[in-house]
Image 1 (cartoon, one colour):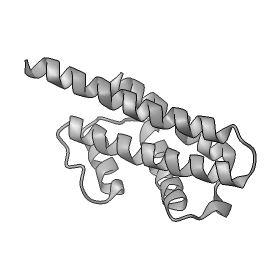
Image 2 (cartoon, rainbow, N blue to C red):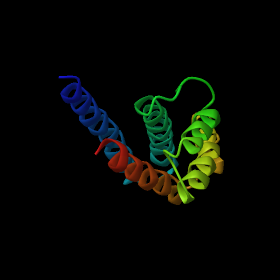
Image 3 (spheres, rainbow, N blue to C red):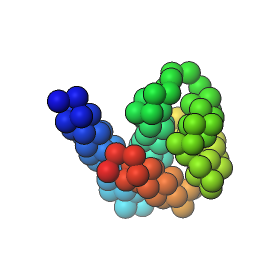
Image 4 (cartoon, rainbow, N blue to C red):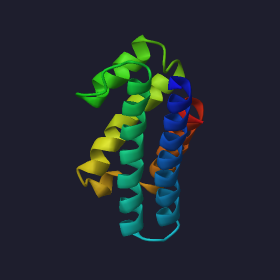
Length: 126
């Protein structure tokens, strides 16, 4: 029974995070800075939530600084290779988006974060 509940929870998590990414991509289709800014916040939220849920799923404390959670995911081998550097680089994006530093964010960066998070979701919750 526990295995079924875990499987259902993982599937629901994947669906919710995927919906957040879809919403971000839909908003990003509009032109102008406002849609880009909204999409950036949604992408940053999806990035952070995905990282924290990956930690929880793998028995890692998901509380505290996101950089520490990423370090724990790296040290346990949950994320490896290029994923580590990419995830760490997106910490800056997350901070810029959630602190409304819009002039420091461009559309290609938002799209890049979305693609990265999609891959994490597919691997961890798909």
